[in-house]
Length: 344
Image (cartoon, rainbow, N blue to C red):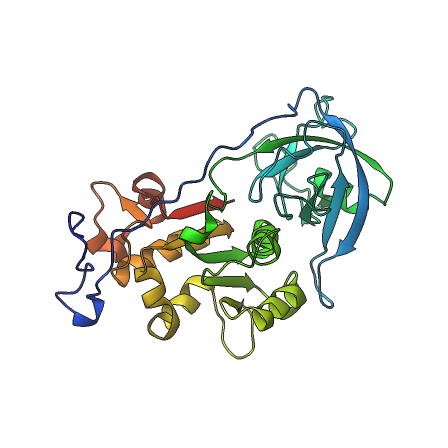
C-alpha cells in the first residue's frame, strides 16, 4: 500500500523492483471551481444558428466526422459554459413511439470563451452513426439487418450554415480544467471523437487570453487508422510551437504495430511517462471508449503508479490487478481524484 502521511512515498511494487521507488510530494487533487449547469433546460430549449461546419478528417476514411459551430448569442447558454462541459441538441421529428426526440449531449470542442472569443459560439465534434440493425429483444424482427442512421448525429452533420438548431445546457461539472490550470500538468488520453474536449482545452491552455500555460502537457490520441486522426494538423503544429506540449499518435490497425493507448503508454513508461505519473502535479483525463479506462487502471497498478489515479474497493486489491475482470472492475475499481473520466 502507499504511505499517505509523509512527503515521500514508496510506490507499490518497489519491494520486487527497486525502480518503482520514487520520491514525490503529496499528490495535488484538482480544485475545479464552480460551473453553471442547465442554464437552458431540455424542456425549454433555445434556438442556435450554425455558423460553420467542416470535416475533421485528414484523408479518406470509413468514418465521417465534422466540427460544427453554433451561435447561441442572446440566449442563456452564451457565456455560461466551460471547456470540458457538454451541450444538448434536440433533433426535429418523433421517435418510433411517436414522441419528440430526447435531447442528446455533445462534448464542447471549444475553449471557455467559445469559438469567437466572447462565449457566443459553441462547437462540437460529431461522427455520423451508420450501422447495421440487429435484434435486441425477442419481439424484434430476428431476420432484419438493414442499415440505419443515427438520428441526431446525422442531423447535426447535415446542417448547413444558417440553419437553426434547438440547443440546451451546459451539462457536466467534473470533466473540467482546474480553476487554476498552472498548478497542474496534464495527460489527455482520447479515442475517436473523445478528442473533442481536448481540442477546446488545449486551445485554452496554449492560446487563451493570457500567456501560454507553462504546464507539461501530453496528448495521446488513439484511432484505428491514421486517416481517422482528428484535428491532427492543429495538434502537430502546437507540438512544434510549444516545448511543453507533446502529441502522441497511437494507431490500432497499423501494418507496423497494432497499438492501443494503454499499451503505448506501458511501452513508453520508462522513457516518457513514469516520472510524469510520479509527479504530484499530474492529472489524467480519459475521454472516449470505455474499454481504455480498465486498460489504463490495470497498467497503472502493474507499474505501482495508482496513487491518486485509481481507487480499489474490497474484495479487489491492487496486488491482484491481473485477475480483475470487467464485471468486478465496474463495481469495485473507480477513478481517483486525479483522474477525470468521460467514457461511453
